[in-house]
Amino acid sequence: MTELQSEVQRTLDALVESGAERGVQVSVRRGGEVLADAVAGVADPATGRAMTPGTPIYGWSIGKAVTATIVHILADRGDLGYDTPVAEPWPEFAAHGKGNVTVRHVLTHTAGVPGIPLDTTVEDVCDSARMSAAVAAEKPWWPAGEQTGYHAYTFGYILGEVIQRVTGRPLAQVLREEITEPLGIADELYFGVPRAEQHRLAVLEDAPPPADAPEGDPSAEMPADLPLFRSAPMELFPAAEMGNRPDVLGADIPAGAKTSARAITALYDALLTGRLVSPARLTEATSVAVNGIDQVFGNPVRWGLGFALGWPVEGDETLTVFGMGGAGGSYAAGDTATGVSVAFTKNRLSPDFATTAQVLDTVRAHLPA
Image (tube, rainbow, N blue to C red; front, side, top):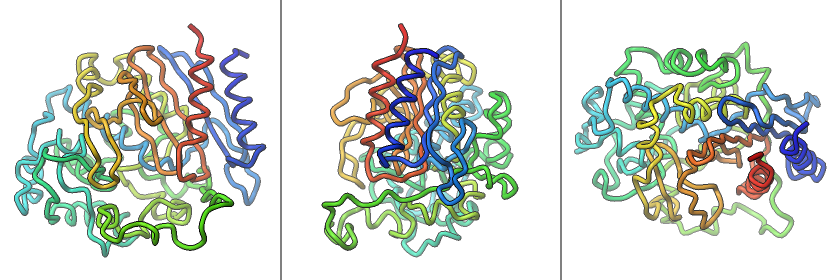
């Protein structure tokens, strides 16, 4: 056992034993080689089913990187361009002056369409055709390219519709044929998981609030006019109850993914080693495209084309790191400087990335030269 493997395992065991986490996975790769593959805890607290390296977990927005990767594959082939207007393959999207929104704008969260209708239900979210029509009918919040704001749901529905119209194939088929089957991860990385396979998924749970947290709804403390509240109904913000629903788990929601840590690192490793896109394409996709203040959440952001840049630590300036975090604390990324890909996936949904940062610190401290 390598030092990296043993230290990562020790960190995961401590997180589970302390009660900070319930079930966790870490995978680290470089140049096609697995450097660490560790798990701890349980996938299903009710039955005691153990977490395994192959257990898929709903990692929420870490899946945005999967959707972006499909876009980059298509761009590498010349099937679309970053400056292709979304309305070119999808004319209905041009409603309300959105005809100049490009694929690049969507990848950088500058398209001006960060919100979905406030009467959207969970059942609606599971119907990609219905959601695509609703997003196409939305009025923009700002002119394309002028501001950036997290497109939590719309990132996936817009790019997913573009992918399907450009390829003529259902999104799940594109994912399988372009990424998961070639990489040997078709049973561990999905947008929608078939009902017959859902028993393999980890069961999500919400982290208990801190002991010193005030009672009641935390959103009641926030300003009523916060843009976040206009972006989606509160019942659609990620939580275990929603994330464990069979219809949600089975739906192709391309702003999120159900994946194991080792499957998502296989994707990043394939990007870093040129197996999915050309080195020039990866350089363009992982260079700073947008730097600014997010108009939905209010935090500073730095985007490449579909990837957040830098480690998920406040003030980090590591521009060679590209990845995506997901609600609840799961995270996956690659580093063009070191060639390392890393993922930390978990089934307890925490409100921050504190344990994520702890795990990443362990990985970075013990990487072999």
